[in-house]
Image (cartoon, rainbow over all chains, first blue to last red; front, top):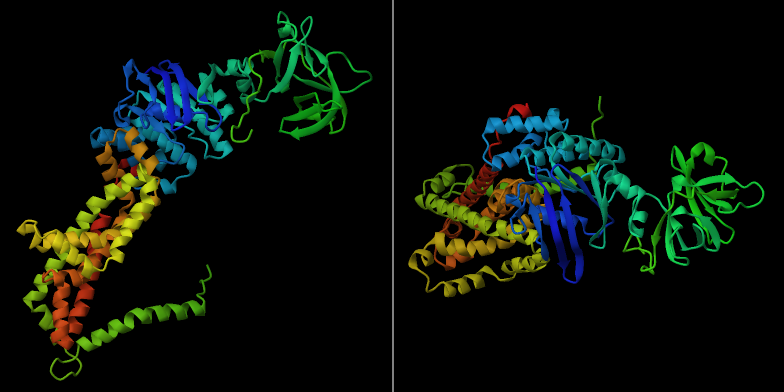
Length: 367
Length: 265
């Protein structure tokens, strides 16, 4: 097992900057996910670690050794790819044996180890099948067993579940985590699926524009996003552009709202108020408007299973708030119902927009 | 019981037309070859016996077959790594190489041989005067388009990048990746190119004749000019031998599969 250091990694493709200086330390046995939208540089970073590409500048250090110029076949790194990568001419067991064959392990030991790993991923019964006889999920399990067979110092997973059905994806990601914990192998996992990253990682690094925006444990990333982009990308978030008012209030499009985090901030400062939808309460309007709440009507009510997402807008549409409420409660909140939306004053997080005139967009191709 | 699938009458007619198109000339040649060389009457195997007892027949067919195998080996050795590299590293060069591969179609063999004889005039005797040197070199050029387009199709049918990177991540170098991962997965394409090359070399007359090498096709042409009925026999024999050679290549190409290990039972 290994610790990994990425030191100021830059990668340019002509005029395009894919990585703009990544610094990342990963401890031995840690599971770190690189999370971000398409084009954020996460796969580029992984390929630099694997050795399939060379950085424009910067270094990759594994176990204290600079491997930046070491070819991929000498790095002792196991990798599972996004595309199905099993060798079509070999059975599952032969695929798993491949790395051991390259390392000249003897036949019996090779076969024993391959069968053990197929058993670990729950596919001992499919050892003699060819890739075309396996489902997508089974192929990725075999690919995982194959990557682990060589007892790599580091395991890289490049969106290994993106081609699978939602149910299989959930099942397999849990298995990946179980195996990772069982073997204690240092792992870097690339994904654009935040739920996937949050559910199985020790730490999540959110990337945007070739940089790491924020890195931390999943709960911290969800609860305390440090940039507007992270706030938008991790989970669903109400983003209220406001200015700091008096006595722990903010002015949201002319409406004063009580926010504890505003205390001590300079009056008039432009801020982004981040409110999680699950903290928002929506109740049918009953008489006059109450101070510190948004009075309006339900403009959308989307069924999500056990919860429903309710969108509230005031008369002019200047002020909106999204709430996740229980589906049983949401049945009383049909579109057009007059309601009042509010949130506890201690739940929002404020980010200063003093140096940020524009809010980031999630998809750079589709602003 | 599963109902039998009906074949449309139109399809049967077209199938029969196709079969007739290929087999009527062959049957006619066979019948012609069974006529007596003196009287012209049917049916005797004397013409086949005459050809099979001619030492030149065996000498020339051996020569052509060995040159064909050499051509296949050189073409595969040159083109498999090249096409692999182009697909992996410089895919934008594919149209250019495809265009170059068409050149042997455009340049007639009669022009090609004149140019090659001139270019290689100063080369060593063992190369210039040998069919295994000069002739095989010329045939590699003729085989280029057939082998290139077969291999190109084969490489397009697999995910070259992912397979290569998967192999490398498991510790394999370039030779192991090419030999153990890539080649087995483009085997069908390489075999198809090899069949075509074999057929071309076995039947090539212009270059061999002008460069004064006595290959099988030159022998066939000689028999055609001098003995009508044995010419039919030699054609049938050549047909059978070429098919047998192709089947042999297919058998070799399929190879022996690895023994089943415990996990595969």
